[in-house]
Structure formats: C-alpha cells, structure tokens
Length: 121
Length: 112
Image (cartoon, rainbow over all chains, first blue to last red; front, side, top):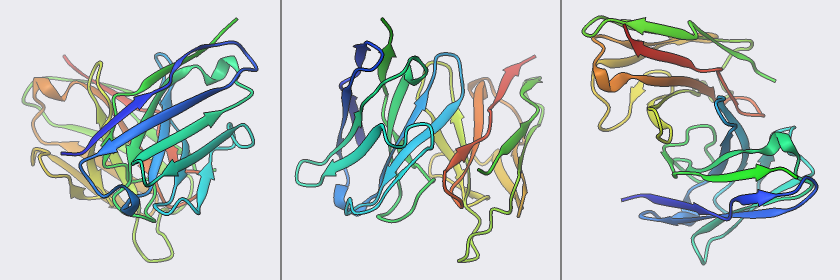
C-alpha cells in the first residue's frame, strides 16, 4: 500500500525558512517522480514543484522559483521541500504526491495527508 | 501559463441525477507524443485530493464507473451518471502537458 507521510510544517515568521519532508513507502521510490501541491485555507489547489525519479530534473511554479528547493534522498525514500524567504501568501496545507513513473508529471496518483505551514508574525 | 477554466463553480445536484463539469483550457493539451495529459481529482470535505481520471478518460482503480471523462484538445468534461451522497466535494481538473502545471479553480458539488 502506497503511503506518503508529510512532516515539518509549523508557524514561521515572514522571511523565515522551513524544510518539509515526505516519507514514502509501499512502492519503489526511485522509480517515481514526486511533487508538492499546496492549498491555502479555503482555496483551491496550486502546484508547487516536481522532481524526477533520479532527482536530476526539477520544476517550479513561478510563485516559488528562487525561494523553494525540491530534492529527494532515494536511499531514505524521502522527498524534501526547502522553503526560504517565506511570505504570508505561502501559508497553506502542503501535500506530497506521487507521480506514476520516473518522468511523468501532472498525474499525481497518490497524495499524502498534508502538513500545514503558517507564515505569520 | 495554461489557464484551466471550470464551470460551473458550484453544482447543486439531486441524488440519483446526473452531473457534468466542464474544464476548458487556454491552450491545446495535446503533448508532442500525441497524448493529452488532463487529469480529474476529487476532494471530499476534510480529505486529501484523490485522482479519479487520467489522460482524459482513464478511470483509476476503485473509482465507480458512474464517473467518466471525455473531451479533446481544449474542452474536457467530467460526468457523474447518478450522483450519490459520497460524491459531495470539490472537483479539480489539472493539466500535465505544459510547464508550469496548472489546476482549474475547482467545482463544488453539493446535494440539493
């Protein structure tokens, strides 16, 4: 059974940093691209970032480019999102999601439960 | 960026009646490999999104066959043949053809 467990969310001041983690199990992690999607309170879904199965290719939404970095450790079956220079508008529930293969994007066949990031002074 | 426009944004439906959600793209979603990467998700209240349909019309395992997807190029539709109480929630389309990936605004389905 595929399981994705996010962690690392919390309250952070504007300009601060946070690193999210997503522990994956139930599939061969290195064989699948992975992504992050966020949802601001009461709002719709917004794609944030994706990474290929090898980790060599990364993609970002314009709203986070230059501030967020996606990475993965295939030896630990873990996906990361390093978030720097956080803004109030980054406040959201952040979901980790699995892609169906190593270089397919935007198909997100399994999702975690999300971790909440609140940016506020 | 590709803009996906869903309609309606709110959809009150009587139990047992059909429902239809439109997703229109500002650009063709046909990829260079000839495949159209349009996906539908369901988000029930308080839950994470769940994929229902991928590549326009392929239903995920465990998704009831009352859900179907259709369309091509820029116009796509999610249909529910007979709405049940468990179908309440928000439905999103998403495109995986162009970077950045984008979602529609969401359509809230409620029971009338």
